[in-house]
Amino acid sequence: MINVKQLSHSFKVGKKGVENEISVLKNVSLTINKGEIASIVGRSGSGKSTLLHLLSGYITPTAGEIEINGTRVSAFSEKEWAKFRLEHFGFIFQNFQLIPSLTTFENVELPLTLKGIEPSERKKQVMELLTSVGLNQHVDHYPNELSGGQQQRVSIARALITKPEIILADEPTGSLDSETEKDILSLIKQLNNEQGITFVIITHDEEVAKISDQRYELQDGVLTKGGDSIAV
Ligand code: ADP
Ligand code: MG
Figure (tube, rainbow, N blue to C red):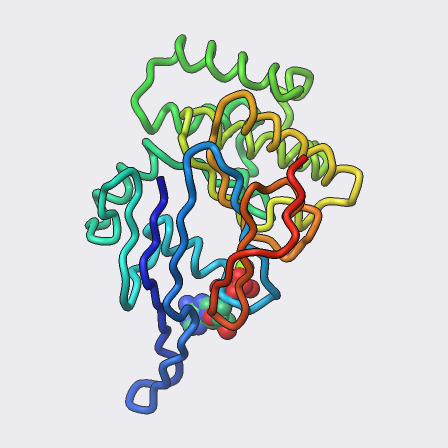
């Protein structure tokens, strides 16, 4: 489903005229199959977020190719990427990235509004989903009225509402205590089992790697496959 071939990325840094190129990803290749949870584990600064930004088209690789469902997405224009993301991807972030001025309901509803779904259908789908992730008591709450774990559930619901095939998660449990982390990881596992959603999870946390089917390691921009992945 996701096929990355010899992907490299460098950033230009420094003042104009005296710029330096720093090579952040070096010939990264990976294959993620439909219905898998893949984790990419690496220390801070190893290039994890850069890889996720490349996979989702927010930055353009210096070299290499990305194919998703057989489509060469690395050749997409910005407009094509925007459409593709809305149709195929859901995103989960470490700091949740909820909109503070919107309620739980409104945050989750937003992607459907962007897709042009009509209000009564939006309401039906949002309420169904919020109930299934255990947030029906918190529909009218604002993000600052929720715990970290509840906010992450809202952001997972927002990622799910468009029924994406792939969820890209950047340190999804990075801001949570270990009990809450367990809850969120079992929710991810459950969604993967029941709905066959493919997850790509970037993390520096081995607990996350344990729920994955495939584990990759990223070290100074070099990706290797393996490590002890325990399927649960
Ligand atoms: P991680 O998510 O694993 O912590 P990142 O992908 O965020 O790592 O960053 C990898 C390296 O790339 C770091 O050295 C970082 O400073 C550098 N980097 C990331 N984004 C940029 C950018 N926009 N411009 C210049 N350097 C960047
Ligand atoms: Mg990062």
